[in-house]
Length: 456
Image (cartoon, rainbow, N blue to C red; front, side, top):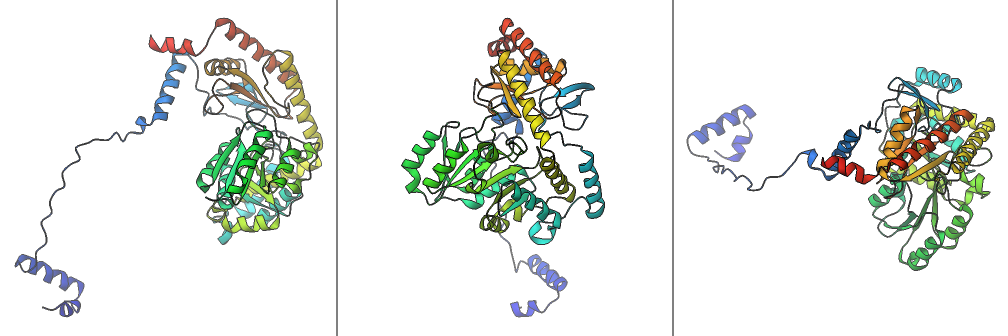
């Protein structure tokens, strides 16, 4: 029977005919030979991951010393200057609610209203069917902070940096950033394929040296710094950064995650603090989760930049748009920040009080400027975790930052100050930290202590 004849058969008739042909030996299939089993075996457990083994060792050390796990603690209250952890009321120094706007009645009312009208999701990427007027309103408000042409908001702060860098630079380009830059900048650079160089924290002489030796080897250069560094509480010499990037034909990106609402007389950020024209910075990057009490991220700059990103930034093009309640929360928070500069003034006064008291108590605050972020540097990881645990038992929540979050031998407690903290809370926290740290130092607790306990 020809192929043309069988093609005219129905699928069921064709199947029956083929089965008959096989049975009669007129069509045979090659015998299937079982492949030999691999002689090697592999450990496919997640427990085999090296990082998991590190976590396991750390947890064992904490158990030996009777320490509670500081990570992923459940809070039973809204984020702010106070919190509730395990039925214990605590003064909270681990919240980014710098201006005390989280739960503000005007914001919650606006959020409830927009949720009733627009629902809780825009249900699509903005480029397709997720665009709403409130997205444009927030972008216009953010652009006005930096006197920029426009801004673009993203559903994730971390993804904002990653996707923007990936969209702007590639294998022929160079990214130079401060050694203490946030993880999102490093991840974005790695994904982009661009070359990466670092300069020691705030050392702009080294930045210039890198440009002198490398600028001609690359098409584009992107310099990245933070307005206020979240681990150290200091910031860059913005005026000199701008001068350097202009002289060497580079782009400058400044991450304002911790500086909007914090720096400058009215909270406009590091440009207001430094007295620099914000239009001289090419890209203003920021998050909405701190002063602006929502979630997501943004970039502000000129028309060409924003137009390009709205079609080229994967984190915007291929991600759902920000939901209405989250967007409106930031719109109203930004409006309150602008019309109530006394909140910024109170935050800055509280920051000065904390750092002045800490220095007077002999605590190591590093290079902090004394605004909303001040570390108490302990150095030793074990003592830092024990110190945080002891403070929590005294009703003070300050989060321990340990390697790899910071370099070795620079573990610290990080205190985030809010406009809502009282003088008594700040002075009490400094005194308790001094007392507990002195007690630990007198006891001689260090990493060796944990190692000896683990070997028993």
